[in-house]
Image (cartoon, rainbow, N blue to C red; front, side, top):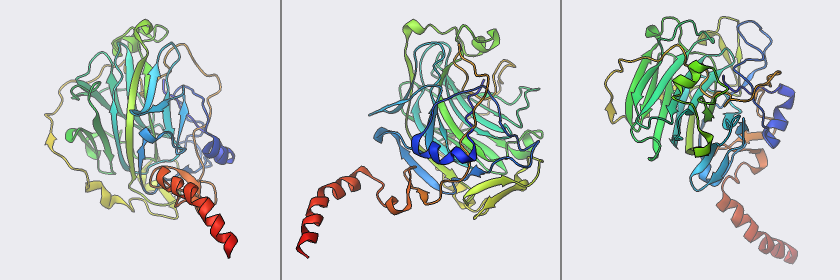
Length: 366
């Protein structure tokens, strides 16, 4: 059910510069559990703070539809069957924290999703159902295994369609913590996961889709509290900003063997857990009571589904390969040439534009 974008390493530069739009079902083109020759994963290796009210950035690429940008940030609109717009990071985290400030989409059967997903199909999710604005579903999967469905929970997220709320997934080798507006709503420790703990490099994905589309399986429609009535749409999820921190450092991550353990991951030019000191920098204002209810077996893995009415026969590749030589990531999440890396804000660009003629005039007098 998940869109999964995987590009060949040779196409990484084109992806960074031009972006791309395509989609597919949950799938990994090269699963490191069965191959030792899979392409390396681009490492974030730092913290970025993306303000989507300023427009798109090339460290996230669109698939399943085209998000639009305005004063409320990135808008992910579902208006008809097949709509499932999302943004996928071109980088991976090897443990880390994702903070997204957003409003969930309304509408029966409409699902807003924040997903961390690895090439081995390790996964950590937050999902909001448009039929209920009081809760968020938290879930995790390991290596794509769906034989048991005792991992999901319903957690409080009041007024999530009308109020801007910051949601956090904080992931280390020892625990995963889900936050809603400063409140810890769930904590999962490694030894509580029954061997299903996500522990391989993850991409960041977020967007909206119609789990209640009539073309979806009945169990999915029921889970999404559909069916979806598109005549009442479009239904939009808004993401104002995203702060993403990689708890490891380096340029790219590779798998040392096919075990799928975090100890097998190697960093090129950095260190696994080299930035782990930032793991304790989240402010917690409250802890919610433990959840007692779990999700049903009809919950699809992946979170961001096909939206109904579309499928792909040849799944594409996800963003992969290192940031091109001569390019760097800025703290705003922009990938730019090294000689332009200091020009990171519209203000600085405006100053250069205004001063350009003056500098040229002065140069002519020398």
